[in-house]
Image (cartoon, rainbow, N blue to C red):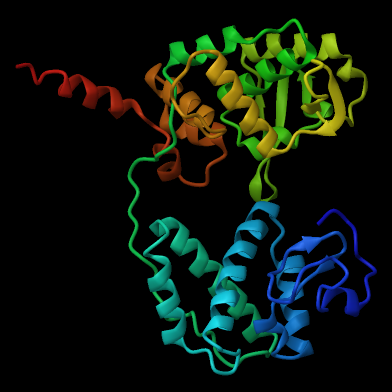
Amino acid sequence: MDGEGDDLAGSELIGDGADNGLGKENLPVVVGTATVVPAFIADGGERAGYAFVDFFMAQIRNPNTRAAYATAVRSFCAWCDVQRLTLQTLRTHHVATYIELLGRSYSPPSVKQHLAAIRMLFDWLVLRQVVEVNPAAAVRGPKHVVKKGKTPVLEADEARQLLDSIDVSTAVGLRDRAFIALLIYTFARVSAAVGMTVADYYVQGRRSWVRLHEKGGKRHEMPAHHLLETYMDAYLADTGLAADKAAPLFPTAAGKTGKLTEHRMARQDARRMICRRAAAAGIATELGCHSFRATGITVYLKNGGLLEHAQQMAAHESARTTKLYDRRSDKITLDEVEKIML
């Protein structure tokens, strides 16, 4: 959370949502300073309501996970309301039916995420003695085996084309070039990149370094590539951001003025910027923020880099995760396909 609502009274946390325009059937979304409990949970009594609030506010620290699980729980609670189920009458076969229905509209990874959210919530409700057993514990999700990621990647020359196409005559242009270069040369997640402050780009041993605050509370530090160092130094010198170490390293733009604000970019801001820059560079590939992570890892491995080093640079717990970003086999497949000559 943003630190608001630490001293809220219980009536503000568990209520009918009248003050913020949301009904009880809406999930656990933080709106201003109030959290609305869905009817399916609230009907279970005060203990259930408080346990529900604690689950989202105390048990899930990652804001992205919290948002995803909130969406999943909202959907499940709404379905339970339609089926006229309660916490006392909900059974394993009900959860299994819901998961089966989800599979008709959602991909296996999304279904598994929904099931994980439901299972984790009821684990917490069991711990808080709201329900006796977890009805989702025995439900199995769909099988999903991933050997290669689906994130679109760029060839090395396309990535170079994108960086060179950015007009750096404005502060926004310098910011965008530095931001994209950071994603490519450090394999950074976009959340870690937008969360950086000016102090997270620093000099150590006559070389510039970057400090990334990755998910799970991990602090990941690595030296800056010489081109990233060039782009970052130009960006900070031109904008004057270097003087304020506590300022966001990548602030938002002030409309189309080419100037920067004091506010931090969000992930959505970064994605819109990347799509806009890619279109302007004539790149047809549908890029996302993760595309540069995959591009950097693939180019690194193509140039003789070792998988274990790529794993360390990407701050992955397992080399299996790093392999999902390795797209070197795509080139081999394309070369083989072109041998089909008629």
